[in-house]
Each structure stands twice: as structure tokens, then as C-alpha cells.
Amino acid sequence: MRVVAILEVDKEKLAETGRCIKEEMERMAHSGIILRYYKEDDKASDYEYAAFVWNADKQGYEQAGRPVTTERLCRERFAEYVEKGWFMDCYDTSRVIFKKRLVSVLYAGWEKIKED
View 1 (cartoon, rainbow, N blue to C red):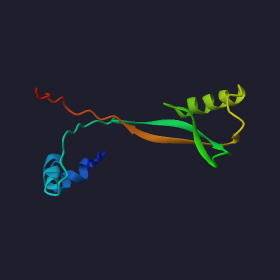
View 2: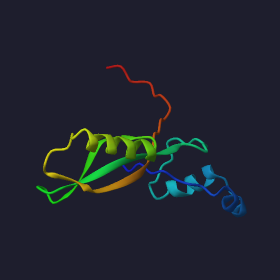
View 3: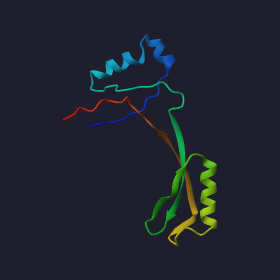
View 4: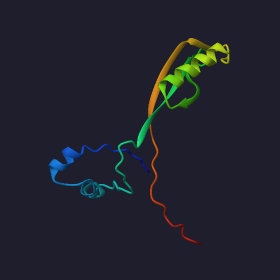
């Protein structure tokens, strides 16, 4: 099984232990948790926003359109979709919730592919 995790490191608290992140990850390696790659970055993640509209047929919220990078754009796009009548009758546009999610893009170093 493979699990990809994003870690937030409190550098001050880590410094109080007298160890660095590589040393901490080496300790975790004994449990099978292996650090493949890491990069210090203040902005490795960002949020994206989407509107979710109630679908009466399915009795649940469904994402309306694709995610966007700002809450304002999300709300404006939803309002435009409603104004132009782009929702099918099964959608109750008076029941909308806006959600955000954290998105992180991770890239590891390139590895050479073994030739057959």
C-alpha cells in the first residue's frame, strides 16, 4: 500500500528537540515510513473553491462546474450559471453550499528508467 502524506513542520519545535527533519524521518524509517523527497516551501499548497448544488433526484449535493482559484470567482460563476438557466430542473439552486479544499502538487526528483 502507498500513502502520500503532506507534513507541516514546526521548525521551532523541531529545533527544541535538537534534531532536523532528516533525522526525524530516519527514525520513522524504522516503522516503514520512508521520506522519498521533501522541499521546504512556504507556499506548497493552495485552495480551490467550488459550488455544490442540491440535486433533488439524487437527494444530495453535487459539484456545479469545475473548481476555481478564488472564492469570489466561484460565487460569480455560480450566479452566472443560475442567471443563464444552465441548471437542469432537478437542481435546487436555492440550496447551494460553497466549499474549499487544500490542493498540493508534489513532484519528486526524476529517476532514470531501466532499459529492458
